[in-house]
Length: 60
Image 1 (cartoon, rainbow, N blue to C red):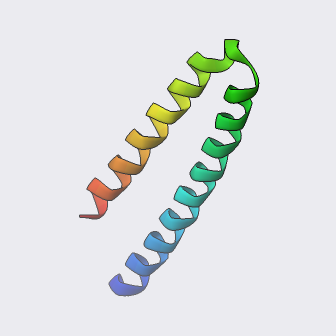
Image 2: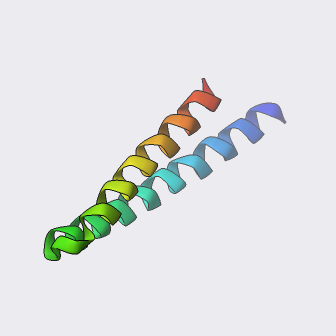
């Protein structure tokens, strides 16, 4: 039961990380396209790294 739950959460987290990476790529493209979007791009980049770091911290 516990192993199944752990496997489920790790799969879910992998999906969330992939979704986050896709969003980040999209934001990077948009940030490159327009100069006024640089602050948003930096914020998205920073927050996604923190988010992923938090997830891995909780797993380990």
